[in-house]
Length: 224
Length: 413
Image 1 (tube, rainbow over the protein chains, first blue to last red):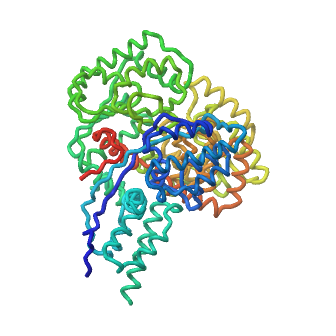
Image 2: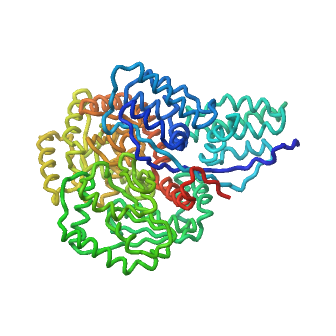
Image 3: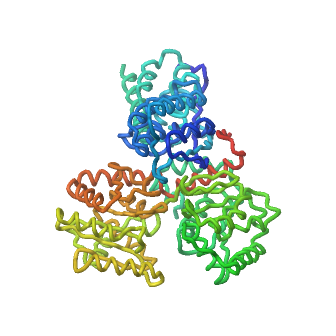
């Protein structure tokens, strides 16, 4: 049995709560102006926080700004540009803020006039508080993780597989980071995890996919 | 005897209850008091009826106190309710005086435990002045607003705001409902109780009895809207949608189920218009049900092929949640909280006109496999988002959040 140079995997869980900022945008210029000064926690919520809520397989956009551009401003071009913003490729939330402002300003330059949404279709800026707690469960070996995965709460799945990408300098989920501590022994498993796109399934489905992926890996390797 | 938590675990899953236990661990023994103005009837009492014992089982020392007042107090708070939802009515000073007096009187009784509590939840405007009447309070005070105050009648909101400003936080159901206040405004959507009479699983015989009682043919398709006879619920639009759809689905039946309108002159007028629009169509059933007909409504929802909530304006729309919980696709008006629940092509359809509603009814009735799939998704969506265990989780998260002075990320243990 190989030891992990990072120690045991500490299983955590989290809960998130939304807080209204009271800031609302009814057109693109207002969106840009609010983006300039909004609490960075609001950017986190509109990119990441939404992922803690239930989703559907045909999820259109990976963030709330893109969805608003499409469904409230009816600006498909802007929605498509916003939807390719991947926060894990940016250094931090301030870089994300700048990227959003750049895209919005480019679109403002292209437009002759502003489109206004209906009053009840404004973009509501929301921020969040996230409470992270230790489940007191520890995992020494990846095989044990495979057994535990189907029983994890969706909060744990969110914390380790999605939120982790913001916490880790390399933009990796916690499972890959931890498996990396065994050297190259689990490189194939790491590769499979990297191919799992968390944006298009609900957290329950994601849990099932993770569990299936670990189970399949250990099923095969135990027979090799 | 099984505990309440075990009963919920059977519905929502063991992982959800485990999550609640973990989240509560640092809060064990904390004294929490909820205050509202009625023990029975109404949405708030319904929520607290389960929330309070659940919090107790999780190890929080939780109490539920109810304030009371005279006729003028209730007249005043009824006026608040209407004014906060946008009706331009002014409250006479005598009623405001009765409101403040009733709160002062209740504070005499409640002050010791409210001042000692670690967390106090004040529900809606009725007990809002209690904070100012408990000068030696030591805990965190939260004002929980259950109503849509997105466009309040300003003079009444200005009057109430001075009682609310000093709270540590407020809670609104939707971001659009939140008013600017000098403290954090948390967002916690409402929820339904899967173990209540209105939502519990029913034996098929009971559902069949209800169908028989109202002359509904189980062999033919049924669309249902449960709501007050109120213009904002657009019952006339529902009848028009039914008539448009019936040209293509001649077997279609419609049930409009609401409360009796005897104490509401406007409701009576709407009901009269509904009856005129129904005419002599034997396939439209207009049902006036008593306020406690929870099992009947449950059975009607389980009998329906499609649940409608074609509101023109809506707060949250818990009838949508209830319909979805019974595994029915919902055709809802594109407004308010309905938008949070009805996800186009997933859990149902959002519509803006009777014509739109008719089109979607035809679609769902001709694609029963799709309707079934949407209904299953709707139920799963409610299980993950709109059951009272989720609301409880958010209350617990809020308490932890408030105890950590607004940090964005709180790491416990």
